[in-house]
Image (cartoon, rainbow, N blue to C red; front, side, top):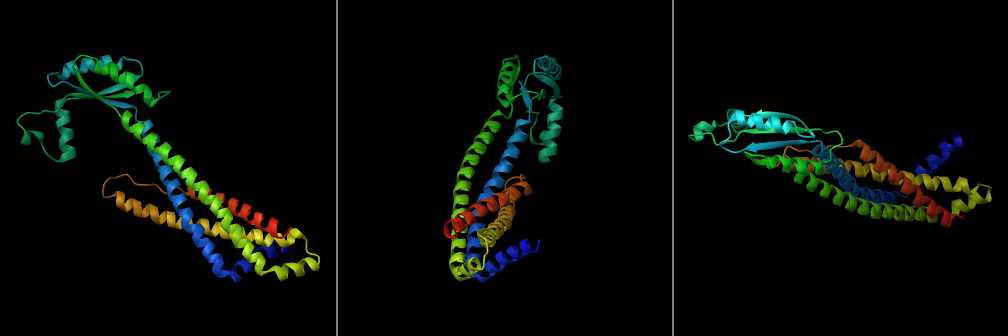
Length: 288
């Protein structure tokens, strides 16, 4: 145990001796990885939005202006009897006017002589085993019914969100891999500089019988510390990015990006892994 703590403290002291290069490496890793963190966070939120859209298995059916509430009720009952349809809620012209007043704060009868809002109904589909693409045949069957003017459902929005999600996922994956490879090279070069600056001490340690493993471990510890420190800095910058993005989004939409600690923990662990690879690459090349 004493040996372990000695090797750990030796790695930390070595980094402290080369403060400038260590600080530069941590800053570079942190800034570049913050873009990966923000991209991963945005992708995570887009995936959440896509999942929410996929679960919105509802349709709104609008009837023609001349359709009475009783006729609309009969048509809705026919729709409910169709396969994949779970239930329906009728919205009469009067109820539509009340909804209008709640949402816009205006009585439609004060604005117009007559109520132009159509009778409609909200149709809820069976969610079990239903894909968003399967909503289209149901919508077309309803649109073909007499006195149905329009069927509205979120299929286009779902497709758009999923396309953006797949595109962003590919871009983030490519950029992340490039930056992580760069992190490996940066950590490796930092450790090389440290090894060169301590070559006399390394020679003395080997002369007194120190094993290769004993000499190598402090340098690997240095690489891990640099990588994790850069990952923590990236996490802080990513958090600031999220806060700034949410302040901007508040001006246009109630939707807010959610901070996901799981993404950040995964990012730091991956950076630590690549830092170990970079450290081992340097020590194996220069100390073997």
